[in-house]
Image (tube, rainbow, N blue to C red; front, side, top):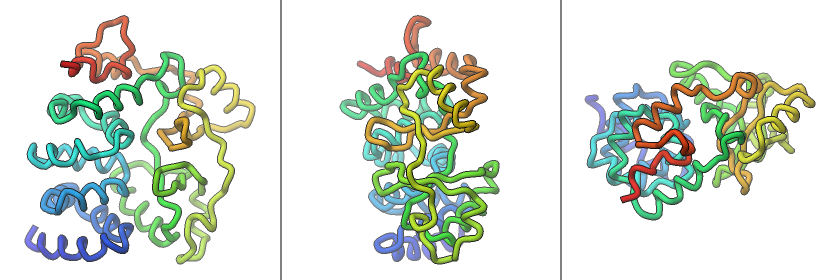
Length: 268
């Protein structure tokens, strides 16, 4: 990228007062270019931007980072963000980064992954769209257009606050007819129905069936969005092949919980 310094200058300029614009600039770049920019920015700025990007995009970018950058960034990410990222990256990348995750952070991640076998947390997907409540309709539409090159379109997007608490939902139709400068908070639907990540899947299926919903957001005990659960996923059950891959990689026995033990081989 010939104008790498120009991108860095622009991003540094925006990040202090307009993180949404800085994030949009990153998302408009190719994966290779975005990875290059984030690696040369100061670590604290890269972390700020990562918090405002879609998880699936971040996961792709991280796999292009060099080891020195990963060693600076990963230990400083919030446990919840890092836990979600681990569900998106390849098993080869999980093997590559496990040495950068230790101590308290490792314990926190294990706790976040300790979902009972029949809980919603085991069946949810972390592939969803969420945007900060202060973003405008114009900004979100631009983000979605950029992301559409990398993922399938979605019918809904969830609205969160700075701490990723779920505060609303907006469908694509309402987003498209909103005034360009309206914030998501002003046009979103409030009082969102959600499911606790520890709820039994049978109870979750009943709740979705009763409301005739095809999907619902999954939250933790503090109402932070963790993922979404789809009705078809509850019916079909967990895809055992992907779970067994993680089991084999981290040395999890057949009698252990696959996701809760994702870091069990790193205890020492």
